[in-house]
Figure 1 (cartoon, rainbow, N blue to C red):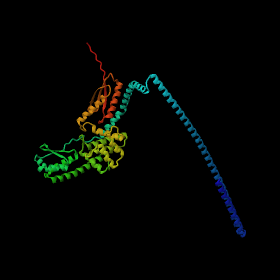
Figure 2: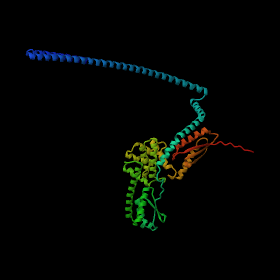
Figure 3: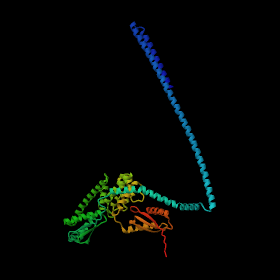
Figure 4: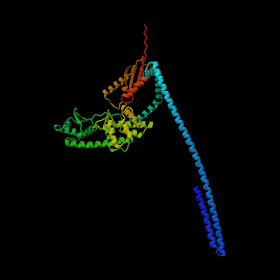
Length: 496
């Protein structure tokens, strides 16, 4: 309405203005000459035409605005009707929901009352309490369903084998092929061969000052009694042992063996070994495709060159594990970068031999200083756990076990090995119906012999799974442990 009033005002103003112009022009041109009067009439006529045109345009604009306003008012009315309809529907839905809630609540109360009444009647009839009846029913159900459980387990195993065995073999074999290295393991003894027995005297020096100086500078112990032609170097630190070996060989070759020369040669050798280790760290990083690591981490990775785990060189183990882990990650669609970095750094804690704590604790503490991705640190922290929390952590653990657990990679403590086999056998013997247990294939398989009268075929399948589950829960071991339950029924007849 305001727009209409405004337009009407404009039209009236235009007409008034046009009339005023016409009156003004008429009054002015009355006094003009005939020629000028003719010109004035033309101007007056043109003014009339302009006034009429303005009036018509204003009228058309007014009509157009009216039509637009009417159209918008119709649209608003339509939207208003839709909103009212939606509000009505929502109100109906809320009412229906409220009704259903009340109905469900009422039914639940009736159901609980009925259940309580039935339980009370059952207790009276059976002369059993609720808990006693529950136990009895569960016991009967378990006996009844034992055959069905066994059959289902057998079917599930066959299906899992059919679907997963080939794919798993392909992935692992392919991963191990990509992780193959030039050689498997190194077994070294830090021994220096002497050109002649007389050199021992020079190494010892007057009143033992040379050997004492050498041991102080290198942090190792020299054993000169092993053989007339050799010197054995002893130290828990492989880096110190390597520095001592190279230094001693250089001193023997140089021939000048005295405390000052020993100090000079050892210092020079230590600096060269540190350079060698840094280059080895860089080489290892480049081989696995990891770049831009902090120099301190690269230097510590280089220490792997002179460190061994159960006789397996740590550079070889790390390179092999990383290649296997990356291949598995690519096959199953895991985060390759996380797996790669975690495999590379998983044993970094083993280089800190002067600190207390496990290599996992020391490694995690060290890596946290460099703001590495949290999934990498988690995978390093869990690479010996039974159940890693991430897929990448599980891949690191699998790759570590493949590299370290395969035949020929490492040697073990035989006493600990025997203990582990005995513990596996005792775990299986703890189950009812088991008569004998034999751990074979270096503890990778258990042969369980059961009493055929107490255990049928279905129960044997269930028993094998139960033993495997308990071993997985209670023991740590490389690779897998296969549990084979043997049930044998013998019938003997005697001819007389």
